[in-house]
Image (cartoon, rainbow, N blue to C red; front, side, top):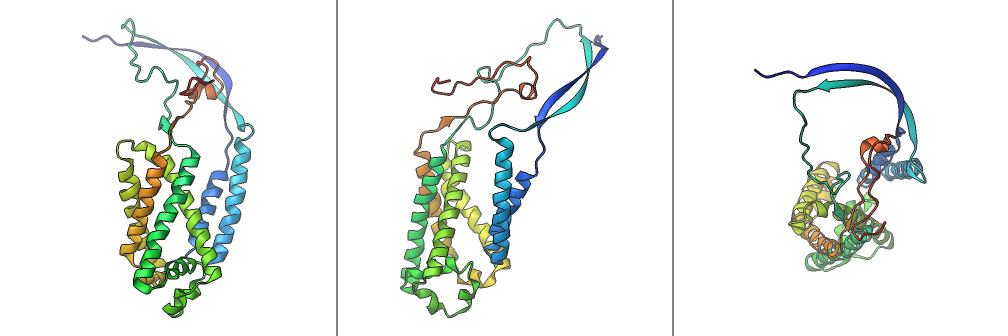
Length: 286
C-alpha cells in the first residue's frame, strides 16, 4: 500500500516583484513595418504612414530598454506550503549544469555578417536579373525598371518598350528597394542559420528562396495582376536562389559568438536568493 504525502499550509507573506513595464511599442513597430511593405504594392501614402509608425515605435521601444529597463512593482501575496513526503530526498537531474539559464541558440553570428551577406547576395541576385533582361529583351534595364515600377505602377501600364531604357527615378527607387530588402533578409539569415547548424545552406539557399518565391507568387497574383504577368517566374526563382546561396555562404563564413546567458526569472524579478548571473563569455572575458 502506497503512503500519501501530508501537506500543511503555513503563514501568508506579502511583497513586491519587479516586472517589465507594459508597452505598446512592439505592436506599433510591427504595424509600421507591415504598412511599409503593403504600401509597395498599393499606395505610397500607406508606406508613408508605415514609416511614421515604424520610427515612433522603434524610438518608444528603445526608450523602454535603454539606458535602463523600465519596471513596475506588482504586489504579490505568497502562502508558504509545507509538504511532508515519506521519501528522504528527490534526485535532481541537471541537463546543463554549466549554464545558469539556457537561451537558444547558444551561439549566433554578428550583425555585420548579416549585413555583408545581404549586400553580396543582392549583387548576385541583381546579376541574374540583369542577365535575364539581356537575354530576353536585349536590355539590362528591363528588370531594374520593373522593380522600380512597384512604386510607380503607371509605368507598368505603358508599352513594354518604355521599360527597356534607363530611367533615373525608377533606377533610384529600384536600388533603394533592392538594397534595403536584401539587408533585412541578410540579417534574418544571420539570426536563423545558427538554428540549423548541420545544413545551413539547405535553409538559406534552397528552402527559404522557394518559400519566399511561392509567397510572392501567390500575393502578387491577387494584389497586382499586371506586375504578376510581367514577371518571368523561372528567372525570379533563380535570382532568389542565387541570393540565398551567396548570402548564406557569406554569413556562415563568419565566426559565431556565444550569447550571454540571462539570469533566472526569479532573480530578474527581484528575488535575491538566486545565484548571480555568469557574465563570462566564451573567451573567458568578464
